[in-house]
Length: 277
Length: 273
Ligand code: FES
Image 1 (spheres, chains in turn brown, cyan):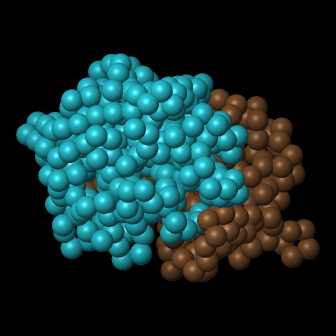
Image 2 (cartoon, rainbow over the protein chains, first blue to last red):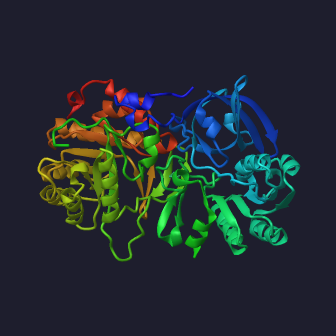
C-alpha cells in the first residue's frame, strides 16, 4: 500500500504542497514470474489507486538501491502494462533481465509510476514503433493501446543478440509488420519502412540516446511526427527521480538541457534533432 | 538562519543533488535548507555548467568528477524558484581565488531573493589554515551579519584541525566534514562506503575540541549516511547533523526517514562539541 504521509510526517509538516499528488511510494507483491528469452516478465500486485488507471506506456518505476548492501544506485523499470480489475485487483507488469533479484522477491517497495508517457493520437493514425532490446517494453504496451484505438501499427525492433528481442511473437500478432534488425541498423530500417509506407504518420521510438536521436532525425527527414523516450534505462548511472542529472540531454539546439527522467522521458523527437544541429 | 541557531538535522548534499524539483514529489522540504549551487564564477575555458559527471558505480560508491557548478544567473533563478515556494536555501559557493566565493555569495545575499538565503557553504577541502581563514573572513564581510556560514572540509585533508580552526576564526558557524575520497584529476569516490571516513574526521575534530585545539562549532557529517543506523553512527562520532547525497540517488525517501529518526532523538545541542 502507499506509504502515505511517511515523508511529510517525518518533518512534521502539512501535506499542503503534495495534497493533490498520490504518494509515489508503492509496496508491491511479486505474483508471477515468466521467462522470456533474456528477460523475466514479472506481474506485480499493487494497491489500487487512481494513478494506475492513468499510467501510460513510457512511464517507469524506480526500484530503490540498497546502500547498506553495496547497491548504491536504484534500478529503473519500464511499466510494461497495467491491468485494473475490480475483482482481481491492480496488476503492474515489468520486464527485468533474467535472474534479476526482483524475480525472487516476494514484496518490493517501488517508487512510481514516474515520468511522462507516450500520448495516444486523438484519431486512429498509422504508426511505426521502433525500439531496441528491453526499451521495446513500453512500445509493446503502446502497440496494444494503438491497436485498441483502431490504428495500424508497424514495428522495427533491434537487438544485438536474438535472445534480447522482447516477445516478438506477441507483437507479430498485433502489428501489421515486424522488421527485426540489429542496433546499428535501426535507423536504416526505420528509414526504409517510412519510405515504403508513406501513410505512416507518426513514429514512436525508445532505445539508447544515439538510437532515439537517429530515429528522430530519420522521421524528421521523412516528414513524420516523432515521439521518443529520451531516457535509456539500460544506462548504468541513473536515479530516475530527477536529482542526479545523469540523464540530461541537450534540447532546443543545445540552448538548454532537458532532465529526461523528470520532464520526459517521452518528448517530441524534434527536440533532440534540433539539439544535434 | 543565524549563527548559533539549531541546525536542521538533515542536509542535502549540493554536489550530489543537482536539482531538488524531483524531491518535492516525495515530501515537503519546508524544514530543510535547499542547496543552491555550487555557484561558480564564469571563467574562459572553464567546463560548461552542469551536474557532476559520474564515471561509474562500484560496490559501495560511485566514481565521479566534482560538480561543475552553476553560474550566478542560474543560481538567481533557483533562488527565486525556492523563494516563491517559501523554501529556505543554503547557497554553496566555490571560487578560484579567496575573494571569489565571497563575491558570489554577497551578490546573491544582496539580490532580490536574498531573503531566501538561509546559510552559505564554502568548499575549503583544498585549503590550508591560512587560506581557510582568509576565504571565510571575506565571506563574512560580504554576507549579512550573523548569517550562518558553513565550511566544507575533507576528513582526509592534511591539517583538518588547523583548517577548521582557520574557518571558525574567519567566521564559520558550522563545519561539514566530508568523507569523499579524492582520486586525483578532479575525481572523487563517494557513497555509503565513505561513512567510516567522515566519522573519523568528525571524531578527530571532536577530540581536538576537547583538547581545545579549535573552538568547536556544530559538525555536519557528510559521506556514507544512508539510513537511520548510519546517521546514528555519525551522531555518535560527534556530529549534530548529517548530509545526504548519493544515498538520495538510491532512494530519495531516505531524506525523510532519516529526518524522522533524528527528530526523535532529542536536542542536538546536547551533543555539540
Ligand atoms: S536519472 Fe537522475 S536526474 Fe534523471
